[in-house]
Each structure stands twice: as structure tokens, then as C-alpha cells.
Image (cartoon, rainbow, N blue to C red; front, side, top):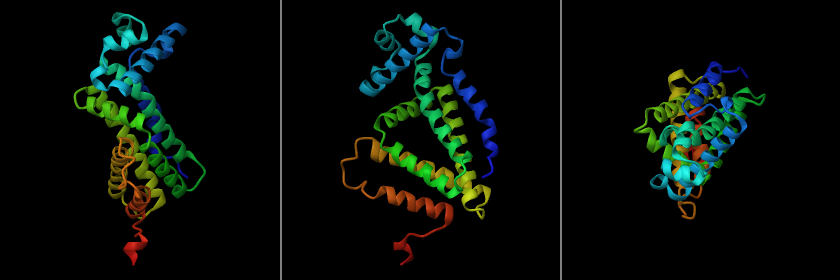
Length: 228
């Protein structure tokens, strides 16, 4: 499978994300790296347990056992801390996409693997909760908004290229629309399955409905029920 053009920008995008998440860990001594990691762990815990109302520089500094001024050496603002919490999650998605596109399996198998990941991630309540905190902050913080836009742009173009590899008849615009819809559906699944609704009856069967919708969007395939 041909490596997509979008992947050439992966390193550049990673550098861009890292630059917006506080002090560069590569420039820190061992103790500094430990302190930075402790700050991120505490911030993640506060977000998951208390939400954005409990998420303040003072609370993070207290949890990490450091002063606010020391915390601000690593992360000058509350937004910078949140960006650092989210960066590994975003990077994981980008790396998974890159591996799928680089793999020796068929394009269809790669697409199916990404769909299964989307379904698994939709049930990850912790990452889902962190993600929606990040989306909320992106509406007011330009750096979060930039990270958000870069990630979605990379993901959309990568999935669109994969969709065209699966179905060469897809035009560029159609593949981008299909990729955008697949991502939007995955985000919706995260709300339905990862935000406290897992014990309700109506999400049952959503996995198969999602796969069927993907087949319809990418391949134009109809479900058995539609065909009959």
C-alpha cells in the first residue's frame, strides 16, 4: 500500500503539538522530567475526579506537592497543563493511523482495524471524559483550538486516503466527506457508550450499525435489511 502524502507532515505536526504543551521534556534534567510528569498525572486525576471546576493551577500544584511558581515554570497556564494531558492521547491516535496506513495488510483490513479501534475507544470512559474537557476548552483557548484542528485535519485526510485505497472510485471530495462523517459518528459513539449510557438498552447493536454505515459511505454497500 502506498504511503500517503499526509504522513510526511507527521513529524512536523508532532513538533507543533509538543511546542504548545509547556516546557520541552527533552530539555529538562531527570528531576525536571519527573516533576513535569507528576504535574500531568495530578492534572489528569483532578479532571477525571472533579471535572473542570476542580482543575486549577493551585489544585494541581498542591496535588503535585510544589509551589504555583514552580508549576508555572513547566506550564505557565491552566490551558498548557490540559494540552499536556491531552497530547499523549492525540499522539496515540495519530500513531495508530500511521501504523494502519504503513502496514502490509490490505486497505480494507486497515480500515476495519481503525473502525474496531474507534469502537473500543468509544467505550473508554476516562479518555472520553478528558477529550470533552479538551473540546470545551478549545472553544476559548487558541492553542487548544489549534491542536484540535491539526489533529482532526490529519485524521480526516488520512482516513480519506485510506477510503480511496479501499474504493478507488471515490472522488477526493467524497472521500473527505466520508472521513468527516466517520469521525463524527465515532465522536457520537463516544458520547453514547463512554459517557454513562452503557447500561441503557438502546446502544445495543450500535457497533454493527456503525460498521454498516461505514460500508455504505465508503463502498456504497447496502445492509441486508436494505437490500431486501
